[in-house]
Length: 154
Image (cartoon, rainbow, N blue to C red; front, side, top):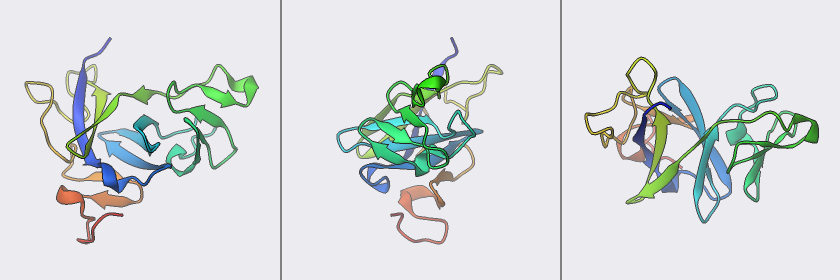
């Protein structure tokens, strides 16, 4: 099993209740969902045809893909519907909120670097991953939860 690193992503308030937002961490696109009582995270691509799960309808602890209505468990990543696709799944990620900021655990790559690179302690405390900006949903968030044009992120 590969090592893991915790990455600070965005303010929890940037993800409305019962909705999802996409976050790019290195080469990974991860969907983070606000269920009201907690946050859950999966890969953002539906295992059917790669639909954006962050744009799906959150129902209970699952999301319905906006392309072809596949229902995916946000807790396990398993496909709940259609029943003929039970052998498909998406990756899930550990997630927590620290001081109002969403922190997500991602694997370190086999080459020894992380997406983004880890600090010696395995957690660098940056609010934004790798490239100076983390992409959340359709907006690019910089430091302080502001979009690239300076507006407060919704």
